Image 1 (cartoon, rainbow, N blue to C red):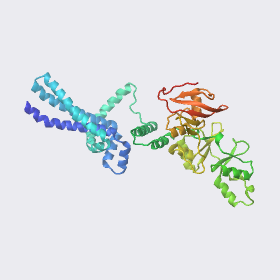
Image 2: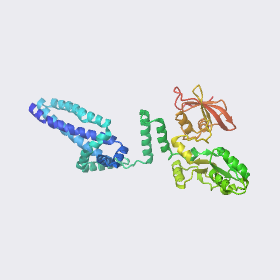
Image 3: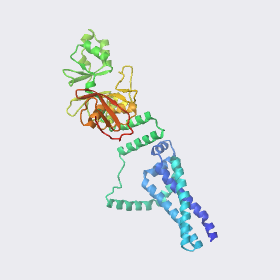
Image 4: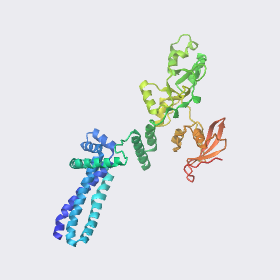
Length: 433
């Protein structure tokens, strides 16, 4: 009997090696980076081509690998059991065979190959793509039959097996990968914010980043040309809306470059300028326009400036190409920009914030994570959470941070003091005093 055991030892070792290949293939192919494989395929890597082909039909690939792995393990266990059953006569042989094969399969056919595959999934997937394709070719018909049976069984219980991954799921997968690598230290905070900003463009409306109508620098077309020129030169922007009668009545957008050309060529001096004729036709967009769509529209129309209106056609604000780009790369300032004083750090660790500062700007400046889905500005968040317009001096705790009302003008909160996250408070504690 010892001779029989020694005779099948090479066979058992060979079967365990094949089982290890199947295990490593399953782990590496399911963990391989689809992005890197696609890039390698574009570079002409034939192994990456095979990996992408296998991942294109993931269910059949996994089914074939599992089928082959189980066949090998069962065959190896059956051979060892048959020999040991004769050696130890009956139930003791079965018990010994079970213990021996469990240890051998666990160590050499599962843990060892899968650990290697986890450490280097892309390389292992490329190495094992060829034998895996052979397994898929051999076991494919059986796996298809099993998949059809499983799909029919699941449909009987109302489970849809043909659900496809949409754009939202893909974006969340990318966002999750970025957050994970940031937590691991391989992605810097600035890169994380930029990558997240790109993904956010598809979910954000222009009214979340627009300059509110109260803050728009406008020109009154009824003023004298010399006064209009003076206001244009004093403004920090090159494009200024031109209105007549009332600010809601926008008749055009004056570009400083157009004004300079006219001044250089006009006869009769500045007082002879017709400012309305220099203004370009205003471009109005709805406040529900997504930033991604607006970015594409800016590029298509080769314009950088649009006025935002609500469903009734009332002016709400304006948005520029620079505003959208700043959502990705952060604040862009040039020598003509006014230095923003909306966020001021205090010696005690708190921050004085103007009520009009957007939550996204505050989160970016302080590396906080205040929610911006229910409000755009810091003042709006406090009003939303408090369900009222607070009085000066009141203090609230929202989302683990303390907000104190410092200044209020009529019904508008103009200044607050915010303390960093309070670890001892509950994440969503609320209160007022």
